[in-house]
Amino acid sequence: MIYPLLTVEIRFEQDIVLARQRARQIAILLGFDAQEHTRIATAVSEVVRNSLNYGKGGKVEFLVEEQSLLVFIARISFKGAKIEDVQASLEESDSDEIGFGLLGARRLMDRVWVKALPNGRTAVSLSKLFPDRIQAINKQQFAQIVENLARQTPQNPYAEIQQQNQELLQTLAELRQRQEELAQLNQELEDTNRGVVALYAELSDKAEELKRASELKSRFLSYMSHEFRTPLNAIISLSNMLLARIDGDLTSEQEKQVNFIHKSAQSLTDLVNDLLDIAKVEAGKLDVCISAVDVADLFGALRVIMRPLLAQKNAVELIFEDFSHDVARLQTDEGKLSQILRNLISNAIKYTESGEVRASVQKGVDQTIVFSVVDTGVGIAQENQSRIFEEFVRLNEFTSKPIQGTGLGLPLCKKLVELLGGRIELQSELGVGSTFSVILPKIDAQEINVDSAKTNEASKPLSPLRSPIKILIIDDNEVDRYTIKNWLTELSCTAIEASNGYVGLELAKTEQPQAIFLDLIMPGLTGFEVLDRLKLHTNTRDIPVIIISSMTLEASEYERLAVSAVAIFKKENASAKEAIAKLKQALVKAGVLF
Image (cartoon, rainbow, N blue to C red; front, side, top):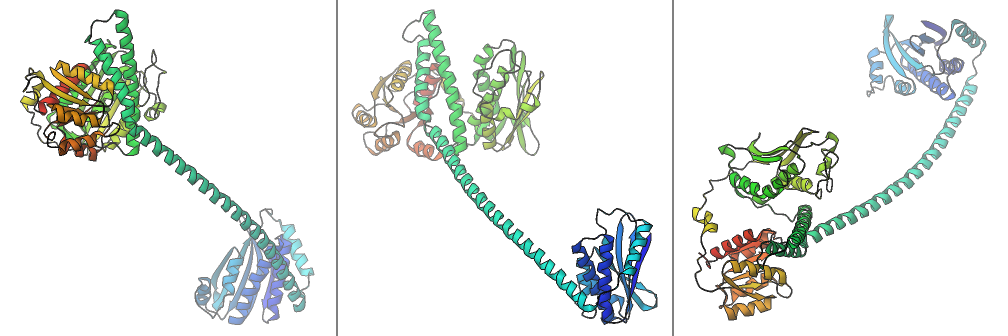
């Protein structure tokens, strides 16, 4: 519905002032606020001025249109100006014929539109939505507004100028107040920004401190591997000797005590090894050594390693599934892959009360190979499936008795898998079991030609080249020298001991041993320096040197040693039988045994 309010004819300059006055009066009567009065009056006067300057006069119609909302409309109609020119002005063209009054009106009103009328006339309509507080106006109210307009007489032009000046002063005062508010807000923002900058600087310092602390921790753990592992290896080796009755029988109580010592040292060694491996991964010190891997040999070794753990779980069966020929051999880091699978299988056995644990390998999609460990154990709840890959997290809620462990196995597996360029996935259901899948990129390996003579070396009878065989042990650790000496006795070898590098060099020159076992980390001269001096002296350069140390070697260090040493072994927590077999293998390689 449309309610007409007032019409003003536009013929002379003073009519511009009249139209402005009437527009303000109507805005006041309709309930618009003071700021809107000025906007409406200014927009109407600008368009009226254009209609007089570029057209041939016209009129202004003020009305209210009631649809879903109340809208105030001022329609200025005139003739003599082309509608195309008027439309171009609204589109912010460069036209000078109509002027920029329309552009100003569009910024002041809610909507401005142009319409062609009959007889070559053009109408420009300006609209403004009513304030939200005014929902409706009835006919009586409109009649009252029209009556009030009729009673109000227009002011003279001077009064209008005075009114405009007052509006301008009021606007300037409002602008000044807003500028002050803006200045205050800017000051608050600057203060806040300074606080934020200071906070970021503090956070950056804290982050840098945490980074340095993390690097220091990782570096400390990485470089402390020798100091941690040496005494643990000694404890395990000596307890193995006692349990093997090398120096005589043990009473049942003594055997029980030694077994406790052995198990405790083994548990501590597992913790130390996991911590050190995680630290080395985080510090970037863990190298990947790619080599050909025979999956049958890998599974066979894992089967042997898991026997002691299976012996504690009579109701659990470990099954290694058959695999196809196309995954029988691959290229990867065998040591790390074995460590990953060993941890997964060990966990599966621990969390399975009865049933089976299955290990398998098969081709995956996108040139990948997938190792899977499936168990029929307690399973893992959905909400815990991401937590188990966090360090020191153990889930014992659903087991009949607490599971021993550090909570480092799975986090280490995840880091090692990622180091090999793969990923680890888990599917599990409470009470049903779990499936851990290790997905690695597949690199085809060349055929692995196993030297049958080398394979059977361990089963050959001992045949010394010279008798007696004299071996020099250069190691600052007395327990390690004692342990190696006892192992060499089983190989019919005589051991000479040197507690440091200087003594070892002198004994090598005077005693002329058939081989030298050399530790790397010693006070005074390191094993690296001893090896260099041995190879420089004419009396010792031809003596084969076997490196045996608990030090974790980087790739460059390994390459440096491999040039001069015939074999490199790590001091590990192996049984006496396994250790002796490794020593024998090294001596065969050195040409001392055949």
